[in-house]
Length: 196
Image 1 (cartoon, rainbow, N blue to C red):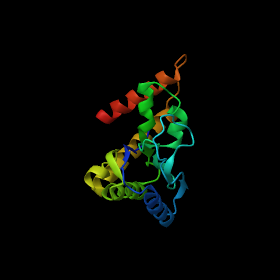
Image 2: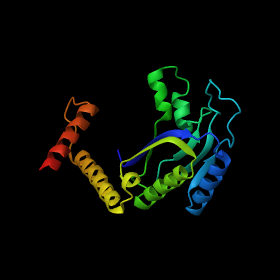
Image 3: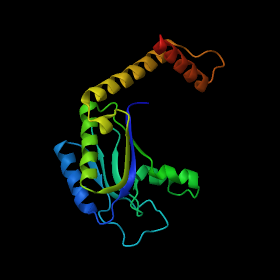
Image 4: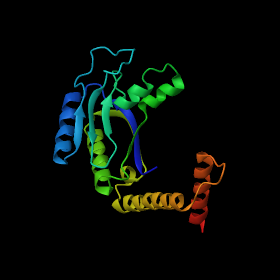
């Protein structure tokens, strides 16, 4: 739970991965974000077998934010080390798609960090590093560029989290109630309250 961004895409053929890494690294250093650089050059041939070591790109970690992956597999599709570790060994087609579904929660990092991440992605897209890039921004800043909409979405998510926390703290579990039933009951209470 918390305001997040969701993205996927592919590194464009002919684009310079090392140059992109250097740009992101420089921005991360200016913003005082932690980062980790993986391999800087793609292999000459796309490997069919995916292994844990085959990550290319950079990951940044803004303060109070989940990591943002600008990493790719040998097939040049966006992914992340944790996704590769979790989904990389599966042969299941349905599960394999999760290897390419990236999400980053920015809720606790705040509006300024969220904006910086979105503006970084916009810069990289404009610089033609990506192809088939898609972004879903729960703050709607990617789509609108409107700070007021972003602020309202942050407020809405903060209120939802506050209400959920308050409801859990003030409502006890019923005897013989499972944790799933308890959470469902809390969610129904919050929805009912919001509709009033």
